[in-house]
Amino acid sequence: MNFVRRLLMGALAMAPAIAAAQGPKLSVPYTLDTLPNGLTVIVHEDHAVPIVTVNTWFHVGSGDEKPGRTGFAHLFEHLMFMGSQHVEYPMFDRLLEAAGANNNASTNNDVTDYYESGPSAALPLMLWLDADRMGWLTPTMDKPKVDLQRDVVKNERRQSVENRPYGLVEDHLPQLAYPAGHPYSWSVIGSMADLSAASVEDVKDFFHRYYAPNNATLVVAGDVKNADVRALVKKYFTEIPRGPAITRPSPAPFAIHDTAVTLQDRVQLPQLQLTWHTVKEWAPDDAALDIAASILAGSRTSRLTQALIYNNPIATTVRARQGSMRLDGDFSVIATARRGLGLDTLRRVVDAEMKRLANEGPSARELQQAKNSTEAQFLRRIETVRGTADQLNRYFYITGRPDSFQADLDRYRAVTAADVQRVLKQYLQTNRVMISVVPMGKPELAAKKGVAQ
Image 1 (cartoon, rainbow, N blue to C red):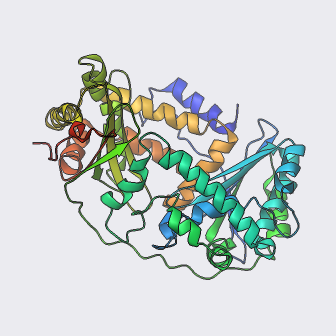
Image 2: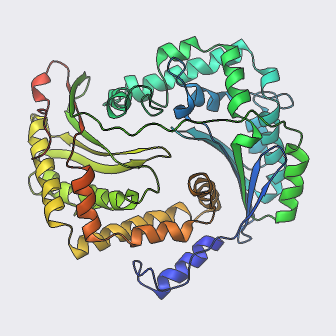
């Protein structure tokens, strides 16, 4: 049981989950250093189990791309495993596997993150591998490698967007929910045309601009000593040159138009997605919107789950989420109708339940259940060294404070019933994007345009 989990279990044993004022404050010790080349290094020692995680965030995602060159961030996630100057492909994976370690990566609108996790004795290997591809990837980058991973990403797009039921929404929603030119107005995976247009020089330019140490944060967490980590990082990363300064423009405020779109897809059941423009991650209303999503569709007893699936079974699934990101955010409700039912039937029930919650507010029991569920999810995210490393990186990226664990919990614990009512009225009773995905040849099953009255 690692440090964070021990501390959290003690806190939960001593006080009710939502009584923020009681019990010990959650604090995750760390050290933070910055190399002369701009690389930020965060170290968290946890000696409970002899494992270590190296978690590297490059502060570049699909939101840093330009129209006509979308999909670069995700394409680069794949290219980072294709070998570097001193580690030929496929030795990156083979060396880690031989040491008993594993690795992976992911890309979103804001960042691309990479991790290795395994025995603490493998730390020098992990850092050396990461340093080699951060500093010496482009000398081995050529057209065959780019073409190979371009085809892999295109196939991934076919699997996750074009040939996945309801996957077309991923292509259409960004451009409907955000104005043209906004960093979130295209999908993370990019378009087929843009992927085809990517040249080797484009890829190298993207790497030199964004995959530089001054645009990255390296977190090492686990059974390590801070002095040892600092010595290894200095040994392997110091020679990597700083990259150019990156200026990211701030998108102008905007309001979405009330929009209804019908997509015909190879699906058996129609699906409705309603999306509203909300707030970015850690904005004052972000936590209240998360709690509202849980009250609406976070459990078997939630408002929409009961109304659509159990009390009057007209849907097979329903979920709600607050999608908060670094620059902006959106809130969605997604419901799949039962066979033979049109989506306007679902829309009317969703509108009625959301209006009722906005007018009456949640009960004390609903609010507490939503807070408990949110706290449980929080605990699950950080019960491992790898999860703790990822959160340290996320907190530093969003707030500038790696140890924001207690502050994160506190903002959810502070949400009141009045807050839930307010955010429902302020954000979720306004213009929205409504997407109806219906079986081929059945456009009559689509929901009718309109904002809840």
